[in-house]
Length: 269
Image (cartoon, rainbow, N blue to C red; front, top):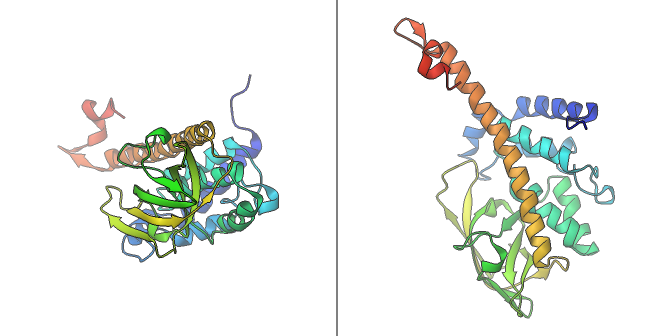
């Protein structure tokens, strides 16, 4: 059995890597820290123009309807490029949740906007108890949400949020929330990774829309899929870090030699 990538998938990786190398440089990521948006909007727009944001979105919603492997390649190359973009919350969580669990009207309203780069949907799932859906304390009663979510990546840039909350019967479900509603408060947090700006979102009896397919098993499947994409993103990032470290070890000299020639450094690389 062949577990390698197909020629088409290798071509996708090559095209994507070239595009990201042109747009998502370290200097660009650094400059994003001082922008109002807090992320690399130019690279995000380039990803949209190339059809990459719609890679796994159905064709009727403006996507390419490709599979999990192609999306994993996208995750890996975004990690490798160190692009300061909201890949994980938008394409790893919000998009599959809306596509697999949403109503037709929800899909029509949101998916094309995501594919075109016009809309950011934040993933407001985490609380103090972590990501486990059965441990959330936010609650929805009569289509109104109360509670807080933290940390939420790219919350300040998002138009909508995908929120995990308990329904009136105590079952964890997923809901869509319009973040422009006056009952929503967004408070910026200090983030370890400043290319992934984070915030706390507080909901005060906020109107919500249920994703009807979001039963507990579906939420678990969503989180598992997002974890796989996060792993691919980290693989790309780790390979980039190793490459940068190797290059530095070959350039930096001490005691008249490249530091990469020292056994303690060489064996680790």
